[in-house]
Length: 137
Image (cartoon, rainbow, N blue to C red):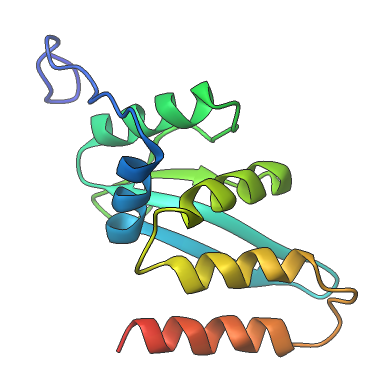
């Protein structure tokens, strides 16, 4: 027994982008952080059961998209998986877009952020925040 999980329990096997996108629609997040000279966009999955994220990570990495390790989220009783390299975030967002429903606008907004000629204005960030607020009503 390791971390309260019997050793015979294995991570679920994900086989399609539709399954990953459905999971992202429910428990995923598009994180957008604007700094003085840069914009950081990350795609994150959160879950109470670590092995779900291990299964997602196995699928995503088999598709040559680099993820961080599954780790305990600070100050929460949940597990966290993040994709943060720009090229990997773009590839993952494009793969998820084909199947997402709830997070589609957020993924599109994140992808448009990288196509901007200049990051000096807040229009794209404001657009993302408006999209996020509409989704959470």
